[in-house]
Amino acid sequence: MRLERIWLISRSGSQAAQRQAKRCAEDLAGQGVHVVVASSGLARNPFPGLLATEAQLPDLALVLGGDGTVLGAARHLAPLDVPILSFNVGGHLGFLTHDRRLLRLSADADKVEEESLWDRLRQDCFALERRMMLQAHIDRGDGVDQADGPHLALNDFYFRPCLDEVSPTCVLELEIDGEVVDQYRGDGLIIATPTGSTGYAMAAGGPILHPGIEAIVVNPICPMSLSSRAVVVPPRAQLSVWPLGETSRRVKLWKDGAHATVLEPGDRAVVQRSPHPALQVLLEQSPSYYRTLTHKLHWAGSLTATEPSHN
Image (cartoon, rainbow, N blue to C red; front, side):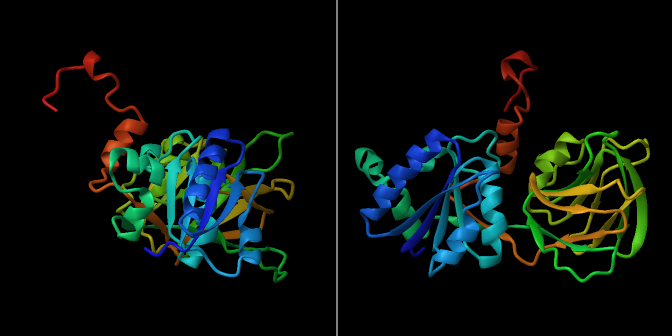
């Protein structure tokens, strides 16, 4: 990998991420790399500014934070084919990030007589994984031709009621490939990728999908019908979601936990696979998705308190 220009994105509000970003920037600058440092968070989006002011795209986006920081970077950089290398610095679960111990700077590598992270990247000692993303366009029911989209998501889109002063429920009609499937009455609806199946969709009782499986999870949130269940559809499927009911029953569309837009009854959200996957740099020589699940979700609990295992 060529390392001439790097965007270094750190999690906003995390002192640990800010300190690590400073160390990385100094290390890279000492090697003649052009580094741009920026902070990212729910209230801070650096990417429109970077894309407007930087003359060239980076060879790599180095993200220091948690999954939320990675999701924000993926939504903006996936359409530009910029690879993302992320480390869990100041984050929480970190499903999408590497252990920060793999972030070995030049001085750290000299002490243990091993290669630095930058040397590994220059020598192409990594793999590039393509993660499926979703996109959403909004068709307004008033017939006015207004561009609203595409909105992108690496984890999920979800629809939730917009009003707080009334019961937080809504009615959403789902159409898949031109066929009406169900009307969901409840707290909302999640449409997730395999990557997002371990996020909000999992918390709402949905299935966990291996990222090697390209599919779309449709999962209702607290439905008021026992027959409403999560379904998994092919990646080529086109899903349309309509809010139903009175004009006051507006619905918010969220992308990876960030606000996307508001839908009125009669509007339609068309969700389908994005043509632009997120490019993730993998450093582990033998990565294991199941090991990640076991570690992050604390599966098997305390092995000393369960039945003996040969493994």
